Amino acid sequence: MMSRLYWLLTILLTPLLWLYTLWKIWRRPSYRPGWRERFGWVPQARGRRPIWIHAVSVGESMAALPLLRALMERYPGQPLVVTSTTPTGAATIRRHLGGQVSSLYLPYDTPGAVRRFLRRQNPCAGIFLETEIWPNLYRAARRARIPLALLNARLSRSSQRGYGRFSALFEPLLRDLPIAAQSEKDAAAFARLGARRVTVLGQIKTDLPEPEAARQAGQAWRTQLGDRPLWVFASTHAGEEELALDVLKLLRREFPDLLLVLIPRHPERGDAVVTTIRAAAQGCRRRSRGEAPQPGETAVFLIDTLGEVLDFYAAADVVTIGGSFVPVGGHNPIEAAVLGRAPSFGPHMENFAAVAQALVEAQAAFPTRGARDLARQLGNLLREPGLRAAAGERAARWVRAQRGALAATLEWLTREAVLPAPRTPELRRAETEDPGPAAGDRAQPAAEDADSRN
Image (cartoon, rainbow, N blue to C red; front, top):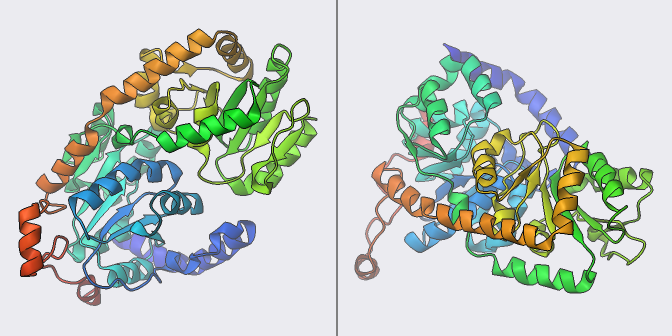
């Protein structure tokens, strides 16, 4: 009953989604490219059926990179399609993998949009990252006999409450869905919602390859910026720029050459952030305009571009994670940790509570309560190079100790029959001589046929 009501409601809301999309394009021009894909008008896939991975935004896209590279190695020649929800997520995939995968936007969860998407792409499997559960999409995929899995799965308290209020809608979706949870706590949360196929496999993001390119770029920035102390505050949201500027004012009393590298989570907010910086009477340069900080006059370097967070983490003396001083839930601190930077963050790290707590317990991260507490903590780190170097080494060591989740996840996907076992080199040579059904081309009814029956 609940699923039918949801199905009907999404049909009725479709005209509003068109209006919402037009408004979004007007407010954020970056949403214009590919807007038709959000209604399921994606290209028609040709040849072998692709493996489909969904990574909603930047954080999930970064987590997906090790998985995507492993899939390319495990299934040579297998098409991969990656869907995102945000332009920044899509740009992250394109920047790191270019034309090696197809990058599309996830359709809205309306019956028509998901039907078009599945009919046109006809994936052989669907892999969702973290907390992405869409009733119409999941049901349409199951009707098309497309195996699904939820990887790197986590549930914040707010997500638990939200899904729990509509348990009649989500419990049937979760009941038989293979779920690889990040932690025992996440696994228990999914079990309370009715999931029965939950395994704890950890964070696949800890299997990120060593970011040598970022280290080289970071060194180039250090050379360009000189020996100024460098504070990187990344993935900020509205309200956090004001906090950063208050902290900067306090810190510059002791460190007058301190440069704040401010990286908004959404680069299109650049103009609004510049207005905030100028209102605080601070000199600012913008990366999107090719400007460079000037010694003695630039206090803030605004990185209103995509794909450079790791570069500036590598250049930083101290790092702060955005989304944690406003009730957003924080962003993943692993990217800073893997580069040997022990991050500071605010009280709102609900989305990454297990990782944040583990880093704190390893003395590799610094939780703070607000502006003055953050200023005090950053001041200690800037004052004591040995203190921050030791904490950074502990952070990198913690990441190295967590690795292995990716290999376990790939084996689990095979065990749960989401993906086929990889073909050996001998079998691939035999298939070249006598082509047969390829990985990802298992005999299944096409999505188009399945959709036409509903």
